[in-house]
Length: 331
Image (cartoon, rainbow, N blue to C red; front, top):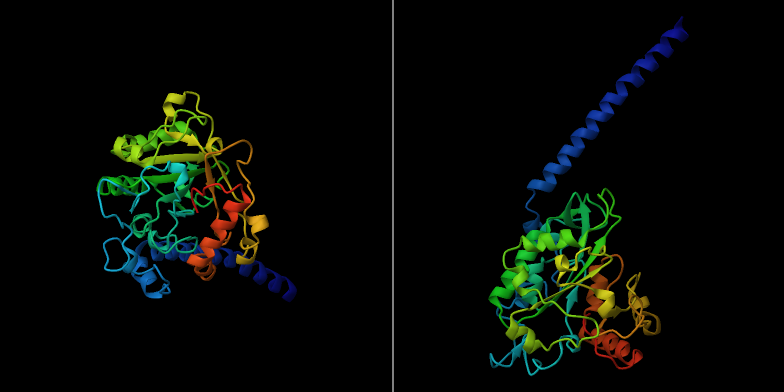
């Protein structure tokens, strides 16, 4: 009888334990959502972010420190410099950011690549923007999972506003379609991307449409004077059934080649024989040449090393020489 009672009590205890566990898990999940939604992350991040060079307002074009625009004359000014307007756009080096949308001040707290958002990146002088697009029912910017995503419209509006306010600037955007995003709804359709772009007031007016890979690219002056100052490339998006519905969304590997990108450490990147070789898009002759200059897992300490002038000059020069002295289009 005592054995039966003991067994019965254990069963009752187990039966009561599971509801408690479920309730605790639900409470923790709700608490996490409330913390994520209402914590003033931007103020908190400002307090804890290390004061790396370029992280403060001195890098802003509106600050009292370095100003990206160094032009002396409006007529000869393109992308912040005099004297480069008559270079073709693929002959000019664009400073770029990877996964540009994923910044800790836009609530990518645990999955961020940057401290500052796209608007501040543009102010600091970056003219190359990279985004990942996922089909999560709606198109979003995401890190391979629909659980960590951002509405792209605000960032596209930021690009348009920047072009409105800076008439001599040309932007280059690369967009990777994440067709297998966790929790996603299938492939990224370029027709849907074009529809999204169409919903952003003024964006299509800036979008440059290149006729064919065999046609030389225009100069910065030609892009500036035409008003078509936004170049958009995509990786891995589905084919457009109607090309007219995707005009201006260029296939990057038809026009460009890039170095490898899956580096685990700075040491792997400074092994130039490997890190400078042509990788994706290497078949045929391409106008654009991009250097991937970041570690696979974002690290502020490694970024400090890779972002020094000496390190950048060394990588750019070595990669150029190793690849037939070709011009580097973006880093």
